[in-house]
Length: 433
Image 1 (cartoon, helix red, strand yellow):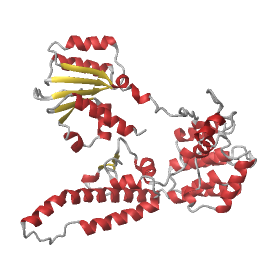
Image 2 (cartoon, rainbow, N blue to C red; image 1 turned 120 degrees about the vertical axis):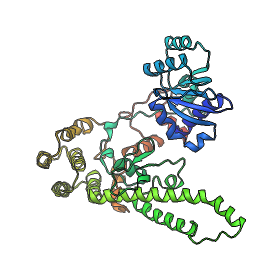
Image 3 (cartoon, one colour; image 1 turned 180 degrees about the horizontal axis):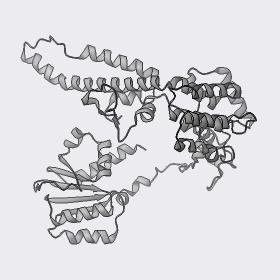
Image 4 (cartoon, one colour; image 1 turned 180 degrees about the vertical axis):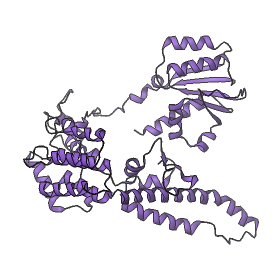
């Protein structure tokens, strides 16, 4: 299910239900973020929404020619703001939508405040859109797989090398926005950029590609832009020339913005990778996650911990990976590594997360995360080792991949995944194939 598309459709319904005419979208802090993720300003303008306001704003002007579409969370604060709004309405009519269930007493309070009878509709999206939770009718009913994060505490500790994952990990992506204000020498127009697969073709096509491929594709994007951009000495000798230029200019402007944005983002990712020596860090992370050579692993971790350029976060994650991988090894050097973290000046807050073994260690998890115990898994790992890997930084495969593979083949262990249903799990999965 595409959640972004689903939310977009709900908001479209709200707008359409208000009918034709100029509109204002009245939101709170959270719903403002929701709308900004699924709609661009130009898209929503096409639906006759010309103004965007916060319900808690005290400086809104009265505009009786506008219809108000209220999209709010049903919090006490929002209900109180809405009561005050209805007592002194600034718009001609109100269509009110709550993102969740609202109590009958609050509905009554809103009705009593609506003395001028400006409210046309009040709805709760979650109850109206009950079909969201209806599954397609199929021959085989859907299967719900419930997982526990403690079964695989290793995957979240590894540096990732695909575009979207690196942006999340190294820059931070909040409501499709990246804050680049701290990037050295950043252009003021690029201090905050939007990355949305809905409206950015380059981003949509490169979300899951690795960092090396992104560099090549950025170069191709720039070369394509250089070929297509209007030439500085372009002649505009006729009305046809001028019309062609005007028609194509928005396309060039958009492409220019795309090029500038992604060159800046990839450039900053590259700077951080170099500054934090993440390629060397990632290589050791993969060794810890995928190999079984304690002597080599302890030397690699010690060497990196002594590197002054290693960040506090990377140092802690390396030791956490070592703790999970070799928690029961007879020659474990975990106490020594903890002392090294202290000497390195790692904060107490970060050192406390070393309780990761209590959270996702062998005693807790139900999976064979580190060492496979059945013959099929051992054989599979053996041949994987013989074939080798193309990229040393992407050797690790999340446990979820194998879990889903075993589920599809009907081979999940009942002891690890108890099944509740009308037939056995093996029978169900066999009928799906």
